Amino acid sequence: MAHHRAGRLPEAKAIYRKVLTCDPRNPDALHLLGVIAHQVGNHQQAIEYISLAIDYCNQAVPRQPSNPFAYNNLGEAYRALGRTQEAVACYEKALLLKPDYAEAYYHLGQTLEDQGKSEAAIVCYRKALSVNPDLVLAHYNLGTALRVQDKLDEAAACFQQVIRLEPDNDMAQYLLSCLTGQNPERAPSKYVANLFDNHAPKFDEHLLQKLQYKVPEDLVNLARQCSNIPQEKWDVLDLGCGTGLVGLAIAPYARQLVGVDLSANMLAKARDRNLYHRLEQQDLLSMMKLEMASSYDVIVAADVFIYVGNIEDIIHATTRLLRPKGLVAFSVEALEKVPFEGARQKIWNDYQLNHTGRYAHSSSYLHRLASENGFRTINISPTQVRFEKGNPVHGWLAILGI
Image (cartoon, rainbow, N blue to C red):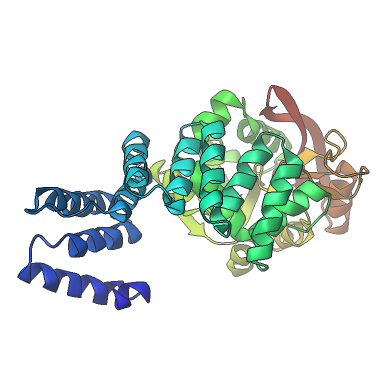
């Protein structure tokens, strides 16, 4: 257990196995082997080990007391596999055994959010905090749930509590910024990665069906209209490729397709499409700096800059990577159509972070960047990016040509 707490998982695993050679039904060793399996991503094995541990406790003579921590960890393994009903049952059992188990309330809240039961999730987060007022993750998740419900003052108070407990928590600082009218240059990489890792399982279904999203097709069609390069010979860099929706739209015209994204779970979905010749898990600008000069004909970024306010460095980096007659194609939300609603006064900058957690950009900013970086072809067209809560989200489609 000392090895385990210190993160030395192979050493801990070896000793737990040694315990089991002497006592094959030792519930603690089985439970903790299951925890390690979950930690390294083998969630089905985790379920098998922890279930055995619970069964052996129940079968023991005299019967051993059930372990609420084992039920909580079993719930975590089920949740990781998307088996939310089983996960909920495990957390409820853990709370039956230990009613003051703050972490189980928190995990139950997460799972209820997975099921779309936000009100019930909020109740669980509040119960967790009534037991442990310093549980940072419960404050954070309660804040995000309240923000979705447009309870902005309550959400801001939650993020302030997170920062009180963890002053260096840049994700909470970012979300507090979007609720208080501040305007940082970009979202933290960890925030973006976590956001899309969590959304990956249902991302395409939600975006395409519920939000009526069609930016990838619109961007590719506009790029085809503006390009002077034969379309079957495009070498394409897909910035923030996500699950590969742009890849689907542009693959028929691409000789080579390279994608980069921060989210491992989104990249796994993109890899399953078998469209990309190479996929990289990196920050966009860091990846671009490592690519060879003049190696792409088209660089595309569909709804990527909504998490990057200041895009000057990225636009400048595209000029090094593009060949003659190359294009940059990207979408942004429109600042002119989406004024910031959370600040005491409206702020009209080149870009503005909104209470949604996304940035909006002005068309004048896009035109200026294009001019400053020597782009000759400049096509910036209004579009409807998606629907949100039944209302259209307005944006810009931008095609910049060298």
